[in-house]
Amino acid sequence: MADHRSFSVEEALAHLRDADAKLAEVINRVGGYDAPRRSDPYAALVRAILFQQLAGAAANAIQKRFFAIHEPADQPPAPEQLLDTTDDQFRGAGISRQKMGYLRDLAAHVADGRLRLNELPSLSDEEVIERVTAVKGLGEWSAHMFLMFHLGRPDVLPIGDLGVRHGMRITYGLPELPTPKQAIEIGAPWAPFRSVGSWYMWRAGEPVAPDI
Image (cartoon, rainbow, N blue to C red):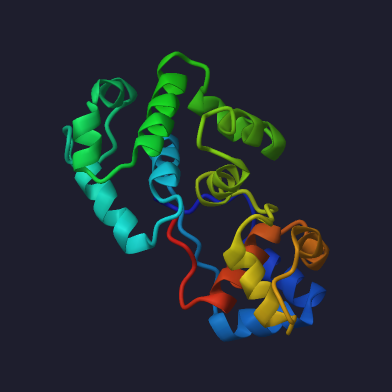
């Protein structure tokens, strides 16, 4: 999709470099900010469920098989189609019983209007988290990924993400992973661009950032 971020990447990088010398080193080493954006909110939430606790390659393979159950084969089944999907079809795609339940609950929330996806862009981060986490299987981490990679919100710090905290450990030379409380303290100077700082922590700890 075209990049219509609600913030200036140049301003964010200038702020982060000034606020945190260690982060500035990571930015200089990694280069420009290139976080993905997901254009379809429903697809983004389906993806968040499918990718939970799986490596990217395995999750991509399962997603491809799942999407192929219905037409069009390169898109997630519409909520009504998903609700008609049988257990055998889910299992054939490699989806666990637990995730079947999560996907059906997401589809039900969208189909009956409990989750109005078109309203989410106008809500605050806290309100988006409240709406998204009302769906079974979509916790705070999934809501944070949605805020960052679908809505493009600039100031999200996903302290529940081990990859971000691993990057902090490497960047700041810590003896062990920082606790969530310590991660909040480390990320505090990055505000109001903590999403961007978090993306660089993924890059500091891994060859590439997560493809959520």
